[in-house]
Image (cartoon, rainbow, N blue to C red; front, side):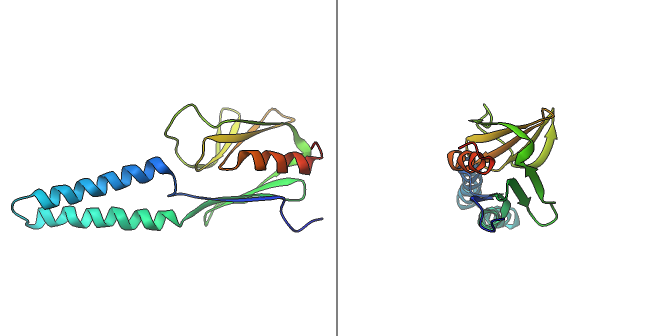
Length: 161
């Protein structure tokens, strides 16, 4: 048994382009309204506090790990934040590996171990995902920033390279 993973990827919550843009636009809007108010009383100062709060939260979320994907010993290990359980996908039960777009939508919510309509989803960012189908027909959708490398590592661990 090997102790070095064939593939490792960490996905962080606050590093996607569109949510960063939305948060920065809100902060800039708060600052602009604050500076253009004629009388800066308590209500005006609240806008300044909210703008700085949005910036601080954006910085903190940028370093917050959502989940980590590892391909190791004929399995895919996905472990997430603090209280989430480790999900182990045994590659011996996988019948089909395919790389597809994650979703047709532009904005997607980050999910971890979401069971919905015969699929189990793991996603933080990126456009592509690796779809793993097991013997029972259950589909694991793992969103990745490096889908080619993830698919290659999974196929390599399965011995189908």
